[in-house]
Image 1: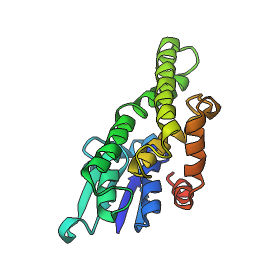
Image 2: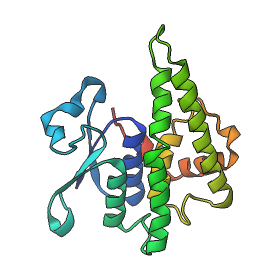
Image 3: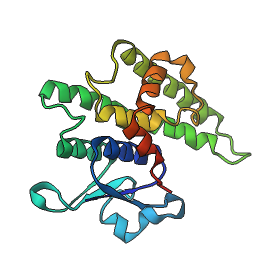
Image 4: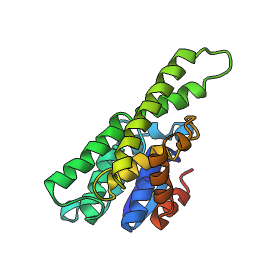
Length: 207
């Protein structure tokens, strides 16, 4: 059994979606980041960076328990474990990894900054930061839209990269992006959100 330590955030939803799509049995342990639960010693032993999500797999490699932190590492681990959404050939895996790293390094940290500046209290001037990160967020959507104009998914087949990117595209309204401006992303987003496993992943109670 896999224990998922998460909260209702894009990074947490990446993993609940992947677990549902891969049909792996799991339980949820909500880590309420609003109350600082990510800094408790129990969670620190699992996630040294005090960030959600993290997992503990009681049936890890060689039948031994293993804990994994960082959402990209978790997705890769789950792909390896299940044999699903994780290609066998090096060339195909490399394609998946490129888009997974694109999400981890760009399409996550940048929209996350938009969320931060939009949430600043009244009277705090965040105009420069908001304009900077909203511009870069839209550029990243453009990169995605160009890719999806020529490809149904980010890699040749649906993969963990799609789950990673969907976790953040799911919040497009929160970072003030209309998918009407990016029709290929909108097509992909609609298709992904219609998948039963994805729907179940977003319905899991994470707070």
